[in-house]
Image 1 (cartoon, one colour):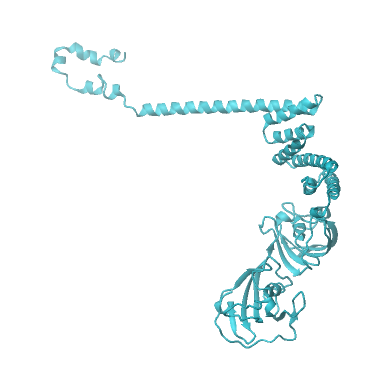
Image 2: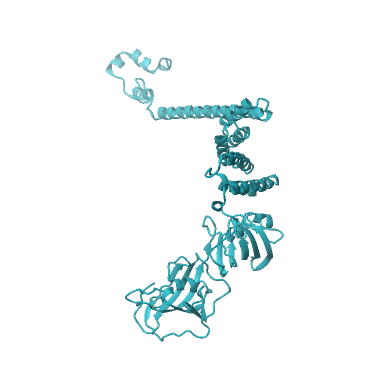
Length: 470
């Protein structure tokens, strides 16, 4: 905060409308609204807020004031960059609101104060104006795709994790028009099965129980380039949601599970993922297959019998991931998963075959052919693999012919360019027979010498065309 002049103001005493905004309700921060703000949204944790303030001691002595300096004060809410009273107070304010905060020492600068302006054990009074705020960005890539503004603060500090069971109320609007308003119960991670857009589901991972927030969601996290015909939403539309997390049951974290529970959970996820795959819902299948790795990727704590089961599950999961990535046209990721499967079982036919398909999609027929040949070596009657070997050989031949043609054209172009250079070089060189030749024009135009006059046959030789063109 910017230091202001040490002036005196009329001492402030909280009025009858002042309320205690501390979680402990111990009277540590009293808030009195001087001017109401706009709307119903409040800035939430992580929002960048812009304020004006005027800070005084109880006797009216001004110790700091952005109003006097004329420079607004900006900070990130809820991150401890300001005194506790500010994080509590500003989080309850609306845009344009002016409020008085009376802050006891434990919510300000404590027993030590902040010399020389703020004495020890000082109660402080702030007049704060909330000018604006930039909503908290909840998108993974921090590209402004999911912006949250808090309406009702949630309880405690716990937030849902993947697999949590949620009870939610959603209200979606587009250009001020409500297009959906409903209660929905679902498992976090399966929102798309309940018509919940990606942006809402991603945001709910940061909600607390009882929280109600406003979300601005950009097209890439909403209805993308397709829009929603039923809702009357065009392609590339930004939508707004008011979301309330009524309650949730948090899924058990991996570190709280024993090895039997981890294997059991991996099997449950495998069944879900496989069902989604069969239904052609590859993105959901991918999410659940990847989730399995969280439970059984590490071999720590598994006994000998459990380890066999863990490895079998891991092998199947890598193979399934390879197949899903192939369906999603992501051959590099598919090859990577197949390579990991083959580390567990070098002669696994599915792993070799799917790696071959991935390599073909990557435009590497020679490497793909080796994978398919390895399948045929293990299973001589595998017609699919044998057919793929033929396809690879054909592609290799086509590649070589194409390369030969490319190189041939290159050499022809180089030769043509060399000819052009030679021709250009010859054009620049002088014609000695024409300009300086023994029988050139200058020879014909000059006066005959005394010798030539005495021997006219010599002069005739010089002008004889037949002789000259020999």
